[in-house]
Image (tube, rainbow, N blue to C red; front, top):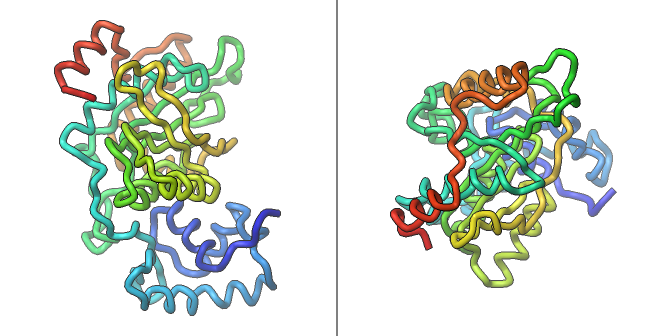
Length: 298
C-alpha cells in the first residue's frame, strides 16, 4: 500500500477515468474496481458516508474540479485554464506519431486518427458542456506475433494491445492540468494511454506536476522529435492495464465510426494474418521530410 489518498483524490480518480457523472454508490463501486479503496485510511463505512459532504464542500470553492450534474450525481471537469494545447496545426503532428508508433519497439503498432467531426452525439448539452462521448485523437494497435494469438482471434479480446493517444502541440504550466485530464478521460479505457506533446515547459514545476499526475493516473508522456520522429521518446511510462475497460470500449464502438471501423479492420487483419484496412499511412523518410517542411513543423 502506498501513501493513503483522501476521499476527494478517490473521487477525482474515479470520475476522471469514468468520463461520466456518477452517484455515490457508483463512485464507490468504481473505486473498488480500480483498487483505490485499499489506498484509503479509515473505516470503509465512514469513508463512503463522507463522499457527498466532501464533494459539496469542495464544489463550493471556486477552484473545484467537480460539479453537481444532478441532485444525485457528481461530475469531473478539468480546471478551466486557457486551453493553449490545441493549435491550428496540431493535426500535423499525427503523421509523426504514427511513424514513431510503427518504428518504436515498445509500440510496434499501426494507428488510426479519429476524426472528431464524425463523433456521434449521445448526450444532451447539459452533459458537462459536451454532447459527444470523449474519444482520443489517435488509437494504436499492436498485433500479436505469429502463432501467439488465440485459436479464435478476437479484436475485442486479449489478442490485441490497444494504445490511446491525446496530442498536444505545446505543454505549459497554463494548460498542463486540462491537457492531462483530457488524456485521462479519453485514454484510461486502453491497455496504455499517453499524452503526446511537441514540447514541454522546461520549468521544474511542470515536470514535477506531470510526474505526480503520472503516478496517480498512469497516463504516460511522449515527446515528439520534429527533426526525427523515430527519435521521439517516452518521457514518463504509462501504466499497463492487462484488461481494457469493456464498458468504455463498447461505448467508443457505438459513438465513433472511425473507431468501430478500426476494430473491424483489426479483426480482419487477425484472421488473415496480415494488416489490412483503413489504418493511417506510415510515411517513408522522404515523405515525412516533405510533410514536415510543407507544414512548417519545428
